[in-house]
Each structure stands twice: as C-alpha cells, then as structure tokens.
Length: 521
Image 1: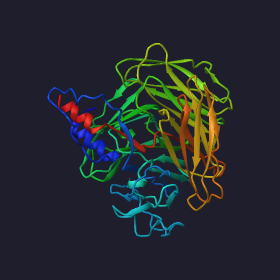
Image 2: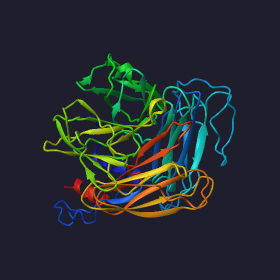
Image 3: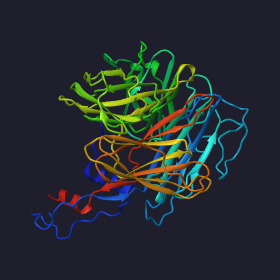
C-alpha cells in the first residue's frame, strides 16, 4: 500500500487542526549554535479534538428492515467556549430499492424519520443532529433505500463523538440484528472473517467524505494466499458518495474464509463489511485492530453454539500463536486447540466449537516462539437449526483513555471486560441519560488478571429510550472490552457485538517551539 509522507510543517498543521492548537512561535533566544534553543524535549500535550467524523454505510436493502441511528458525545470532554455542532448528512451512491409505501414521521425529539413516500432523502439532507453532550439523539428509518451517511462534529461536541447504527431485519437472507459503530475515515482496514462462499453475501461499503475522489484497492486472501482479481484494483469512490462491492464478484471460486484488506491509493474512506447468510443470519463485521503479534478478542457469549476463528498474517514471516480462553474464573487452554500456525500471506481458520463450556469469556492469542503480526476475528453463532443468528468479534486494542458505545437498551446490553495480563485492572463504566429522559449512572469494576468480567452496564435512573455507555480505565494493567446488544425476536436470539476502541476524544500535539528548534539545527 502506498503512503504519502507528510513534511514536518504539514504534520504539525494537521495535528493543530485536530487538537485545536493555534499558533506556531519561534523559540526565544535561538542561535546558530543551538545552545539555548536546544532545550530538553517536552512530551506532546494531549488536547481535546476540535473535529470528529463518522461514516455510516447504507444499512440494508431489505423491505423488512428497521434502522435506528444513535449519536452521542460524553459530557465534560472539552472546555471549549464554542458550543459546536454534530450532524449526519445523507450522501449519494445508494443502489437500494425504492420503498414508496412508507409514510413520513418524526421521532420524539424532532429528528425527521428517513421514511418517506417520495424516495430517499437527497444528498446533503440532515438526518440527525446532536444538540448537547451527555444526552443521546436518535433517528429511525424503515426504508430499504436509506442512504449512507457522512457525519461531523466540532467544538464541544467533537471529543468522543460516537454514532451507532442498529438494524433489525425480520426475515430473509441476513435475518437478524446488524449493528455497527460508524467508522472514522482512514486509508487501511483489515477484515478477517469475510467470505465468498455460496449461501452468503458479503458487501464492503466504501464511503468517501471528501471533495476529491478516492481510489481504493480491495485485496482478498484465502487459505492459499492472495486471490488475484483485477476487479478489485483501483476502485474509484466519487466525492461525498458511497459504493458497495460484492466480495464474491472479486473471486473466481467460492471460499468460506477470506481476509479482505481495504487499502486506499489516494484519499481516504470509511469501510464497513456487511454479511448475510441464508441460514445463519448476518451482521456487520467490524475491522480488526492493526496487525500485532498478540490479539485479544473479547466478549464471546456463554450460550454460543459455534465459534470460528479466522487469522491472517500480513507480514513476511509465518506466525505461531498460543490460544487461551479467559473465562470468569481464570484462563484455560482449549483442548485440541492449544496452538495455531499461520503462514505468511495466508488465511487460517479453525472451528473452536463449544469453547465457552457455558461461560462467557474472551479468546487470547499470543506469540508462541515465532512472532509475526496478525489480524483476527471470531464468527460467533447463537441458536440452533432455523433459529440461528451470527455476530463477529474482531481483535481490539486495549483501552487507552476512554471508549464509548451508543444505543444501549435496558436489560439488553452486556459489557465484556478482559484483563489479559498478570495485573488486575480497575474500570469505570458510565451510563448516560436516556435519549428521552433520565439521569446518568456510573459504577467502578475490578477485573482480575487473566479473567473476563461480564456485566450489565449500570441502568440510568428513570431512563427512557436508549442510552450510551462510556468505559474508562482507572488503574492497573491492560484491559480490552466489547458490548453485546441482544434483541431476541420470534425465537431468534438476535444479537450484535461491537468492540470498544478508543473514542478519539483527544490527540497528542507536539510543542511547536520544539518542532521549530529541530528545523533550526
């Protein structure tokens, strides 16, 4: 993948735009000898971001799908005099069917429902606005042609701004709960756990938020290496638009387990991968954490009837991994699945079966001798026969400062917190007020080393509507987290799992004087 190298001035300007620093000043007393100017390097300051973006792909083409959008910014993030705005706008590029029999409506807060008898909202139409930190805003749609959305937040609404897209598909291929935390634009995404097999349709949705076209390569890797296809090279995504691509159109032969790499040659995109299985339901497959020698996949539900692990080694070396399951009381090695060898440039998959033994937990992958970076994901199935439903758990980075997930429902949300190391971790969980009223609630938990703590987030007092959950590490060792939302319907255990990654509420900004002093050397 080609990368653009920024100059020092460009990098500093980019960080200034994100973090809100305003002025670059020359160091006082600078001279050619550099004696007084070369002071000790200062650690970069961490400041609240001044602008955030979120890209939501088109939710569904099903005539029996209902989608809820929830936007949220944690309270107290930025002490900015600027109140700020946060808005989701519809974009062009939807190829969804027209559904002209549904009528307009509004939610209880005045956000216009996207349902309508005059076709989908034109590009640039506001779908959802967030008015204040600490209180979620929601909008819903039942349209089969609902468009992708581009969102941005600035000022006091930017730090930690999060958007959740949740769709219930009542019947047909992909039937189930499809949940996604809308992504920030980037240049690289890894999706282990994708498929081009018969009976399954996987679409990658590419959304371009910028005013210039983006060019993207879609690379597929199977058990024997790169799946060559010219169709995935140089895919153009027009400005402020979204393009869906069916993965099976990029491969000559069906494959059950593949890894998709989305790599931008120019520009940046948001990438989301939606799966639909004729028998096992469907969901959004979140992107894996960046390649690393170890991986943590948190939040396997205790009643999972099937767990399948997919791992890809993108580097030049093979990877040897040790597998462990971190349950509520400690860590064990799954019988028959002690280690996994992953060849360089190839996708490996293993069916872990009933790995949980009825107890919720997390899968830990660690380098076993030979160390090489990997990306990984789990496909988790609940239910049996014609009542099966599927969700995905990607590898997720450890909690940094703070992570937020929106659209939690009373008695329907479960947090999984895992401390994979030898040190316990203390974590504070805050539930916001509901979208239609209530008071925030918070609770602090201790996660024992080598265990997974599975809890319901504290319920907001008098909460009405959905609420957001913010997780912060207080002290201790590394901790990883995910959220499961379960909305059973007609005997089907509909569920979706979202990894809790850093909510990008702050950014490191280098000292301007230090940067200019380096240039004067």
